[in-house]
Length: 90
Image 1 (tube, rainbow, N blue to C red):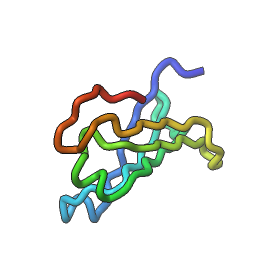
Image 2 (image 1 turned 180 degrees about the horizontal axis):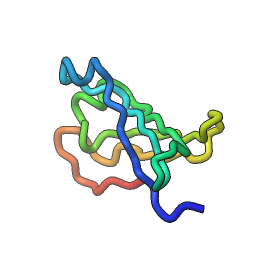
Image 3 (image 1 turned 120 degrees about the vertical axis):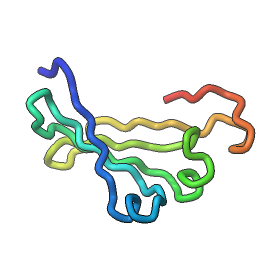
Image 4 (image 1 turned 135 degrees about the vertical axis):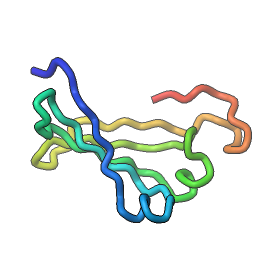
């Protein structure tokens, strides 16, 4: 039973040095700081570079033995990356 979770993004060395965004990885922990899940964001370099705040993505959340438990999908909801016109949905 969980009453709250803590999410920590793992920062890649390449991202920190070059300032170039890579696919995000997260550790999801309980209130004691024990990792209960981990998550990986899947999307393309183009999406991360040009459409960053409104980019489409899929996040796969897995338990500690690697079994996927949740998939979160956010499609791109705009006519173009240059002129967003819809609120994002997950």
